Amino acid sequence: MRAEILAFGTEILMGETQDTNSAHIAARLPALGVELHTVTVMADEVDEMVATLHRGMARSDVIICTGGLGPTKDDITRDAIAIAFGETIETDPKLVADLESYFKGRGQEMPQSNTKQATRIPSVTILPNPIGSAPGWWAEKNGIIIIAMPGVPNEMVLMWEQQAAPRLKERSQGTVILSRTFKTIGLGEALVGEQVGELFGQENPYLGIYARQDGIHLRIISKAPTEMEARALMEPMEAEIVKTLGPAIWGVDDETPEERVGTLLQQKGLTMAAMESCTGGLLASVVTDVPGSSAYFRGSLVTYATEVKSIAGVDADLIKEHGVVSAKVSEAMAEAVRDGLEADVGIGITGVAGPGPQDGIEAGTVYVGVAMKGITQSTEMRFPPNRPLVKRRAVVQALLLVYRMLLETPR
Image (tube, rainbow, N blue to C red; front, side):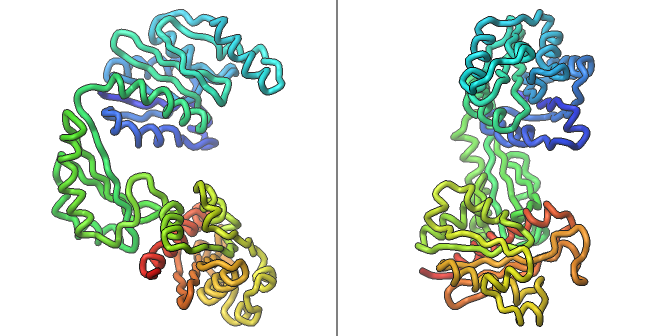
């Protein structure tokens, strides 16, 4: 089954909103036996949308649309699909009643403009939206499926996972596509490529290599008539990657650094705390996104101002001697928060997030210190001088440093 994704929204083209929906869907289509071949981002212009839908209907089995299901004049995805299918769009009284109930449950009266969201064409099966006012559409005609979902990411993800994906899996026949991703730490892209070089160049299974924020990823993709056959094709390559890279592999598939660190901490019966400067509490936010993190995460101190680091236990003379953005200070921060919050593992992060330099230190320079019982280590990192990027990558690399040290620490 061939598919394409259409992300509707002028705001995406203007850079006001990022299209995370297409990436989410694309990553999950192979497991459904669906092969994605095109992703298109489009403005909210009905003639162009209809023309693109017609092209998609001629070359794809399924078209997955996101965005344009709101109540305003520029929300025209429903209209475009109706025109593409040659059907008349009409208001559905049941959908109106459902919307009125949705607003009533929130203590509001439904605005008249929301009636636009209570429309359908004959070829549509409604995909309910339990957390928003925009129902989705499953439109099917002459063997072509068009799925329309909201552009709001949390609404789209829930509708995709609970309704659209299961329906699509039922319709998908023939080839099963499986993928497996191995995530590595401590090795550059060239070195990883050299070590598993003999595995590249095959068509099935296919091996790709990608540089990501959390290290170098290797992704295997296999295709076969059944899941069992696809898995059998993949297994020898998986085994060779694990044998060759071994300890450099920190995670698989959707695993994140915060999840892996949390798992190791729990396995070893350890707790962790952090003192953050340039990351402004982002590490704490990421760590506590993991359910159950209260079992091992003691907390984080955001010591943004230099003098606050001293209040939190970092020697003021050490700061004066080495500078607040330094390896020594990151180590002292890690030790101070470990002792102050009575944790087993302390993390200290200090750096210059940018966009400009600070005290002669280039933007993008970050030092991470990690303190455990009997051992304190630090590392210097250099990132492009983009403030949000520096913060995100510093957190990822800090967690991966903790992960590596935990692996080397017996308990």
